[in-house]
Length: 220
Image (cartoon, rainbow, N blue to C red):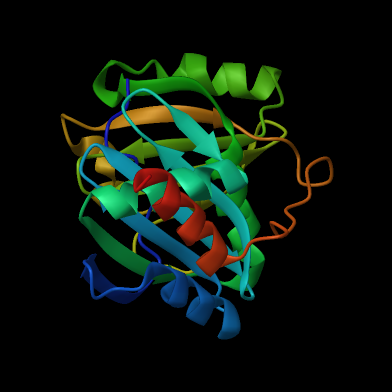
């Protein structure tokens, strides 16, 4: 089951609709040239694409539809295909360079629980499980329009990523927590430990060439 996959908003850079006037390859190339660190969120109604940059290098791409999930270069091609067929809303958020790998690993992580209602959560049981499993990953708490990530390393809380921030925070404002929303849900996403799964740039990406490859497939 896929609900709208959103991440916490970092520091907003820009927001616009993709149209024939928006040249996606040139847009991505510009972020690369400018050594951008952060992520671009593509909202295509029933599909979502996320492209993570660290110092101008793409380090993770996630593309999700109602039935499929793609990662890496394959995800980039699927995103290009969707963008050539469907209008998208594009949002760009800046993050601290050293924090980008956290978000990249979430995009690549394995979802163990998805779209669970927070109001039915047995938090004591879940926290005990995370500690016993020495869980590394995150809990993604979200509503239809907002999200919070709680990062864990070896069963202990490492920090929080919330709206309007560019990196990891040590504390969470419980009084204004998303969990108070009766429709709030959560995902449990397991990720490898950083030492075991370094976040590296995707190689051999040529935005113009890859965009053209997809265009030709769609216009045979």
